[in-house]
Amino acid sequence: MAKHDIVPDDVPTDGLAERVRDGLRAVEDPDLGSDVLESGLVTDVSVDERVVRIGADLTGLDDPTAEDVTEALRRRALSTPGVERATIEGETPDAGADDAIDGPAGVDTVIAVASAKGGVGKTTVSTQLARALAADPDRDVGIFDADLYGPNVPELLDLEGPVSANAAGDAEPIDAGDLTAMSVGLIANDEPLAWRGAMAHEAVSELFEDTAWGDLDTLVVDLPPGTGDIVLTALQSLPIDGAVLVSTPHPTSVGDTSRSATLFEENGVPLLGTVVNMRGFTCDCGREHDLFPDTDVEAALDQPVLCDLPFDERVRDFGDDVPPEALELADAVRERLAAVGDLSVPDHALDLRGLPKPIRHEQATAEFRATEPGETFYLLNDHDPSPLAAELVGAVGREGPPGDAFEEYAVRRRAPDEWVLAVTR
Ligand SMILES: Nc1ncnc2c1ncn2[C@@H]1O[C@H](COP(=O)(O)OP(=O)(O)OP(=O)(O)O)[C@@H](O)[C@H]1O
Image 1 (spheres, rainbow, N blue to C red):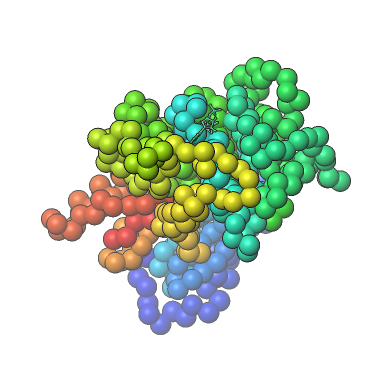
Image 2 (cartoon, helix red, strand yellow):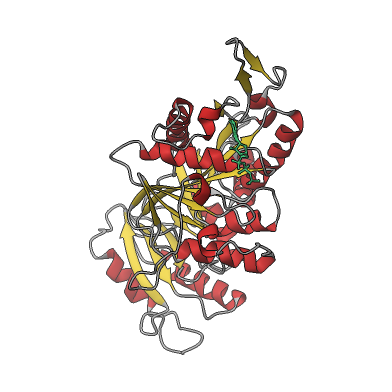
């Protein structure tokens, strides 16, 4: 952020926003010719401790013009006596919203359950996890079966269609005891599923979006297996807060799971950990057998093992009692969610969404430089800010004395088009 050359301490901050607004009237809207306030290009001016934030609707302008206007607004704001810093924020309504779905309004947390391969127990784990989370009488929990090629949740929970629509035309989830459930299987009428590509993606995201989930604390999503396009588009379009991976302890399964982990990480979905399914069994004589005692899943995947599930009838029993291992899994998931949890974003976070790309870098660098040592710099973006973060940390880190450099930063995807970066200097 550019600093005002002279900041007389005695310039009062009372009425500063109004004085900045007056100054901005000298900037012309390049499309309409009138001043930027009259034309509505500037949508908001606020001041906090001599830091001015200007909301601007730059959506109709090409990048070079938007850059010029942004620069003119910033210069004008900084030339107002008493202003120390000035930041421009773009309008965000359509920023990056192409395929992204905003979370269902009443759903607090979405947990995805995924596996690298079919048949490793993903549906069993997601269904038992949902039941275990719902065992808390104070929590409302739903399950969304997005596994197009094996939508088995209805079978496990003994559910049948038809699915009815509410007055708004949204699909009503089916009551499944302590849970509510929706499955692509409930709308497919037992027809062979031969969905491909865009059609499959649309089926998953549309059903997710068009389901009347109501108020839920947690929604568990059983994703299709693999790392192909359908999983990719599902994890890019659904508002997932954290993912649980399911693997068997077989070294090949663990190797494949590490590729799934990479896919999730690359898409900014926090990994909560792995469930190692069919870890071992207890024989009739009572002895426990670990099928792959040498496999250190935690080390191989570099993420926590949430629980080891035995190969046992109990795990695949969806009767009245939730298996104790599933209750432990639910505890571990809640704990991990709290640990990786949402980065809460303060009001003063720099919101880069809606700004042309060249301006984003410039503004982020300026604000980051102005962050005091010990303070945390927060930034909102409509796509993964990791490359920008690495650039900031590298460039500004090198400016300080040796040993002062910092490399740690946290990136979270709060929604498909809302990413948060936090760096503490
Ligand atoms: N821990 C376990 N102990 C005993 N049986 C299990 C266990 N986990 C899963 N199973 C059984 O293994 C089979 C496959 O499980 P499941 O359907 O959950 O896998 P999946 O990964 O969802 O498969 P897909 O998505 O390919 O259909 C099912 O018959 C299930 O009952």
